[in-house]
Length: 262
Image (cartoon, rainbow, N blue to C red; front, side, top):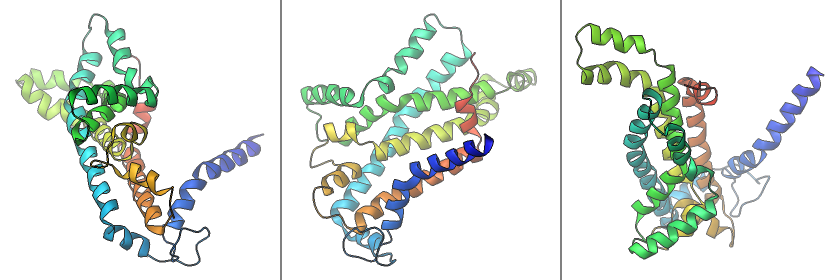
């Protein structure tokens, strides 16, 4: 029975990773069009990507949106995580549920709501409103990763710092903040990745002036696919591998999945 379970797990993992492997291998194709298996191996897909002004501009916009998502969500996530995990607030469960609402709402509904709102405010075409929309949808990941680190933080360390005469600001900067830094880093990385890769919300509110890379790649599916399009997807895959490595390195993945109830 155990052998069957192991074989089933391997088959499931292979099936789940097959599309990723196809894109990654195709990104090194030597052909002029996207074929699998590739006729040969070459890096020209990545060099062509750097020479494509439309794709590179979209990649830069995606990176800007990713950084804006981190800048918007980090201070709010820090404050909310400490408030919900350290203090007994009235309506705490209701507030937590409300903060998770953006992620639980269907993306097409969120995109439609932001389209109506941004159109009314005259903000369609700017990048930062797109960043706000993406943060609204993915904010729980910042909140829960920081919250998991707060749960793992030993409160005796802060008590010891206070006993030794440290001010509250000093205790936060030199004891509390380093202790929750794994959650802060992973939450920031996740929001950056979500900012770069978010598709459905971006597709709904994007214009030709502020299309991000996922929207440009989707538009390219209607034409001839070339290795540079797979190379753009390959960049996302390499970034995802870095994220997985960092989450494993800081052991925040286990904290996030098995966070204690407080």
